[in-house]
Image (cartoon, rainbow over all chains, first blue to last red):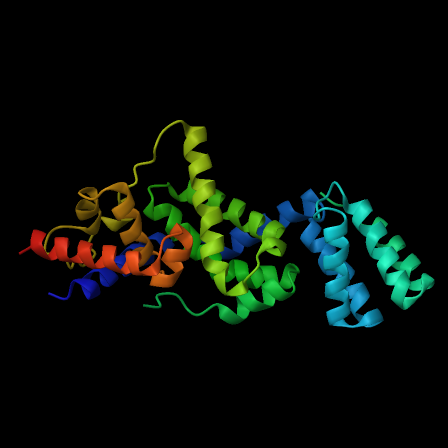
Length: 114
Length: 172
């Protein structure tokens, strides 16, 4: 007997039986509701900020600026979001101008984190 | 031994840009795998679904800390493993890790000539049992198991080989 094949087939039987009653869409909807209720995560907030920054300074610069700001404020978390936004605003001001820096500041502080 | 449809593109999109749309895609790809993971370790269907949702929420929140998108699956299942351990601690007992879900016991073809995988797994140490579940039920590649368990890939290959030899001897 080919044991590797036999084990793979038995594993497949397990998977099929376990998956028979899974309603992935229902689970997804439940998870999405939790995310909405909990407010933005730092990751989501970062994603929104990158949407704002990319047209201003390009994808690469946006990413490296956010990484630098995150490092400067000791790692990104909901608790130090304001510090992060201040760092990011300062960095953006230095190479995109004061108006862009103010925009980043206002947009960042308008986000509510969980 | 790819047992799940490739999720590379979906995962790459999510890691690169973790928004609601990419999260929904990665959820559809990974949630069934997580349900299977928890069910194979003795969780009832409702518990497996709750834990899956917790893991996917954590994934969304922590994806920024993932350094290498190629290691997404081991990273995700490490979160799952921790979630399961936490659940077990809260329950104050070890789940029946060798118990087959009831729906598996009826009418399915059994390649072990009367002995089901769960019964054979009963004879193994918890470490060996986990290894076999990761390989044959969760469908992990050797390098992914090595990453998940933080052991060299050669060790994983050797241990799986040894277990298959044991199995063959058991049924000889």
